[in-house]
Amino acid sequence: MCALDIKKILVPLDGSKNSFRGLDEAIYLARQCHTSLTGLYVVTLVLPSKSKPVSPIERYLLEEAKIFMLKAKTCAAQNGIMFNGKVVYGDEGPEIVNFAKKNNFDVIVIGARGRSVLKEIFLGSTSNYVMHKSLIPVIIVK
Image (cartoon, rainbow, N blue to C red; front, side):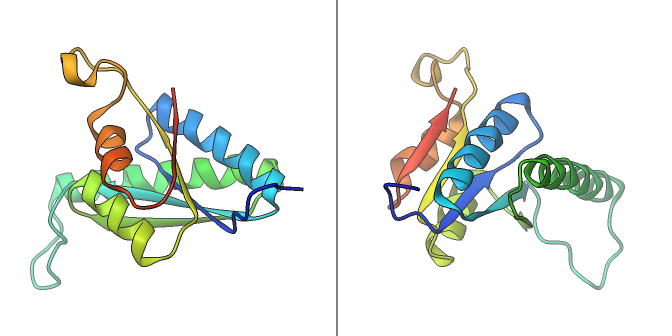
């Protein structure tokens, strides 16, 4: 039984090892709280218009997102957790924070990654942004 009242967990994914470490922790939390997960992949491009064809880079990024979400869904299913994947377009940090707020998530579980810049020595820029701008709790997995 979960001591916290967590019903909706958001886990941002970018395909890196650190984002999948975040997924592992989110799966553990979801098992404890008997809830499902939503994975969010942010494509760092402007939403393609329907009037022009998808560029090769857009096609590559969308295929990459599909592969990562399938891998995450498989990992969650192997642990008995229902996983919903969502792909959005834009700047990662703001998109994660806005998506979590708009969809009433109870917690964000995000992987961190180290950078050489002094300000971001322990956290990646996206996890740092989410931690400081989110109005809901954030669990950062290193």
